Length: 259
Ligand code: ADE
Ligand code: ZN
Ligand code: ZN
Image 1 (cartoon, rainbow, N blue to C red):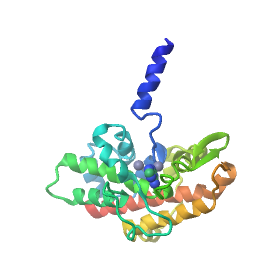
Image 2 (image 1 turned 120 degrees about the vertical axis):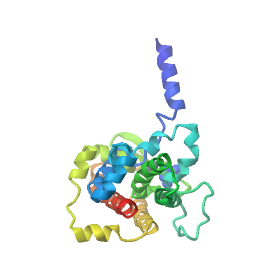
Image 3 (image 1 turned 135 degrees about the vertical axis):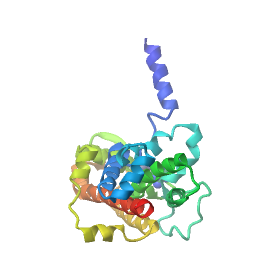
Image 4 (image 1 turned 180 degrees about the horizontal axis):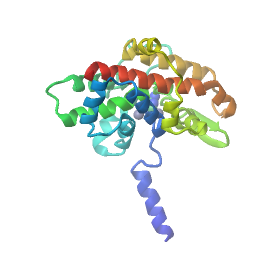
């Protein structure tokens, strides 16, 4: 009987189940999807619903993480983030030939705008776009290569050992203890003007906003530090604002394509 648990554990490890990084985590990605859904134009909403066979943006937001453990989708791994040294810019640093989040988002937008692309291809790239617009707003997805976007930056979260990347992907959101729909419903109230303002700029501009937050996080976190309520108090509204910006901007991009 024990042997069977051993083999199940090994199988899960092998499929990447236990060690898979989840990015914003399911809750964060779904919150961004749900917020985007509420900012779509009627026309965009209808066309997206057709493309996704009735599924919501929240539902498809985690797809890009779900395919990660499938060998076939290995090349999409580097599309979830971009790393470059803190003292350089994205433009000045040599681009990885494996792609990055900026080029991933551009590719998705191009496929969605391409009249010659199949429905299947469009649906695939729409699901990826929903996810990557979320990742773009996770500050540590605009990180540095030495510590893999703080994946090897060890810290404690309350009494558990973890890393800084995971604190931002999942731990802080879990401790906040809201479902994705509660996070979406309780996003800060913003005016039409604020929405338009938020949707201004380019994907690269939004990436640099996340980068600035990334630098702030590194300035305020020590290796091995025990993080908990004080850290939550400092950053929880930053996290909530990033989920909201991701959603509002995703809607802006989708309205432009489908609206
Ligand atoms: N792997 C390497 N760098 C990463 C980053 N910045 N974010 C997520 N995963 C990574
Ligand atoms: Zn992540
Ligand atoms: Zn991701």
